[in-house]
Image 1 (tube, rainbow, N blue to C red):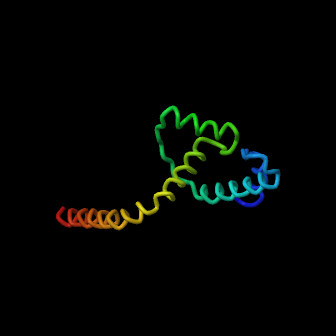
Image 2 (cartoon, rainbow, N blue to C red; image 1 turned 45 degrees about the vertical axis):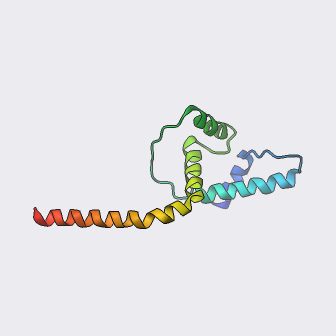
Image 3 (cartoon, helix red, strand yellow; image 1 turned 90 degrees about the vertical axis):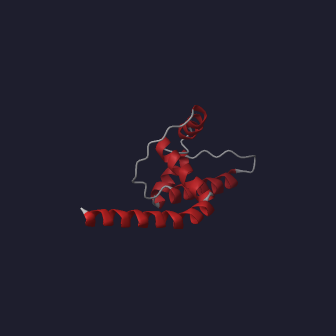
Length: 115
């Protein structure tokens, strides 16, 4: 999302906060827009998912107030946020996953040699 798109989308973000004034609201709005644009870059893969009623209600509420353009955009944002929040888990598990992938590839190659 370039600066022109961010500027255009500013009017679509709703920010709720106490009576701290328009300047504070604008700063929060800009931080949200920046975070959204960073988190939603490069979304070219499709993932189907099933949500319970309460989660869907929450996603739809954010789409309704135009904090997100679509359910897909909202879901992508929250998946990204969840991954970032548990980065420690992924750092711990990825070396093992890489080794499993390597072993699977070696097994496939050995089967092709036998055939």
